[in-house]
Image (cartoon, rainbow over all chains, first blue to last red):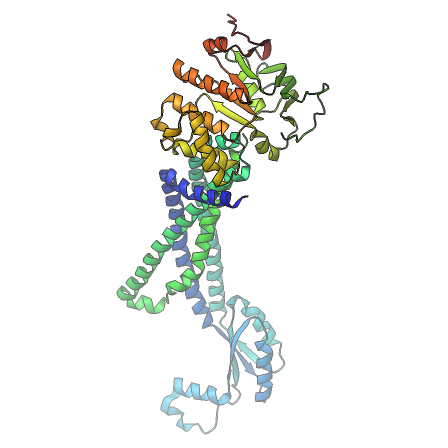
Length: 298
Length: 246
């Protein structure tokens, strides 16, 4: 392709937007509406996942050791466990630290009567998990270590959080697929209508001797541009809606905002921008590419 | 002239000056009688040919076959050395660049002006911008539209619109000009103007094939006339006349 033909094709793609104002607006509006819903849903799901993740981070497994286990042995177990995929962080709590913690939490001034540490064999490892669903595997492993006396864990919390996580994944996956299918259906209809109106132009191009590529290229450029506009508009709207919603919840529902730790808009947009642009451009590209193909056999 | 394909299935040797060859061409659609039935036709370079006949005689099918919009059910078609039965889909654009086509309904791009409509044909064949700027005004002058290059299509009369279509068909210097009822939507004056332009183009060496119902023009111009009826050629005469079959 000659360089001037390349720029001509790009230029025609831009000009087509103005030549078919109503079709352009309808297509942009359809893509925007679909991606707005997608963006909104994505922001809600991401925050929900964040809340669950925060809760997960608090879940720990505590490993206690047999009487007479030395600190070196415990530290060896610690470094062994740290190599496992289920483990995010391990905190070693010595017998003294365990007793201090117990005194502080439950006894206060009544602890003065104790001359020796009653929790002398309570040195333990508090293990925080990278994924709560992996808790059973870690517990089984820890229980198999010879110096380990017992492993304390919260089965219910882990199961519930892991269940909630799975549910969110399934529901969000399902809704996103449905949204995408609806978007593709609506957008391909709009693109089909817009291109069918210009069937004559495609026919003329073919009669004159245009290659399929040359016929298709301006429509594809147009489709991509519509996709870009169609994804930028909802990104801007969702940005304002999201920021305002966080501000509103923070000011009106103070108690709720301490429970729900909203993600900053930048964190949500780190992924939402590329996803929305890819979806908009992808839909615009494939919509125009496949629709023009139907009219190429002249 | 490009010769992309060998003429394997045509037994007779095609003379060098023959630009269109049809040998026993039949075109059938899924229902009804064949639109073309065993048509054999030879057209030489530089000829001016009228194709006449009633509706349903097969004229439009013939034009579509020559444009390679349709493929014959049987027989062979060779245009400018291209065997249209065997031509690859990817080679069709290159083949069509040798043809100029004019339709009854003009088929202009209404959202572009006169200049852009003609330049469009050059853009498609990837002519450099410098040449487009030189060629388009020149061809517009040939069809007497030099002063209207900025006009929008809907500001033009029917005759002017057909002249724009003619300019668009000619700007790429085709070897063959195919015109399908070019005067069908025009008054007698504009019809004559278009036909005179086509005659002038023919005198410059372009082969011109005109499908028409216009008896007065056909009879006055004294050109080769091919008369079709029910998918077959019933008359083919130099300086022929439009015979009323009824």
